[in-house]
Length: 69
Image 1 (cartoon, one colour):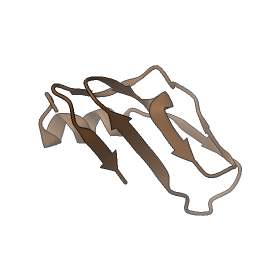
Image 2: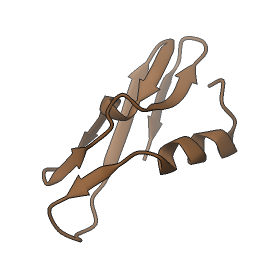
Image 3: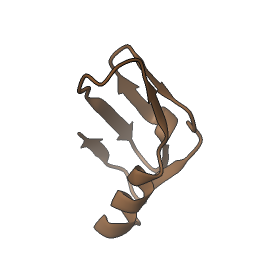
Image 4: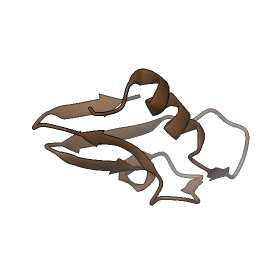
């Protein structure tokens, strides 16, 4: 990943979500290989809408598989 941990966290904080209720939910991001990871890359439980799916989260620099939870 090209970004450091601080930049990753700051990028995640800028993801805008709309939720049907206040119940905790898990969002999961999986990406294989090189490329840009955006908010729209995530999978999630029902009741969650990502308002800015094009928002940049990270860039994977070499072939790898990453999962963030």
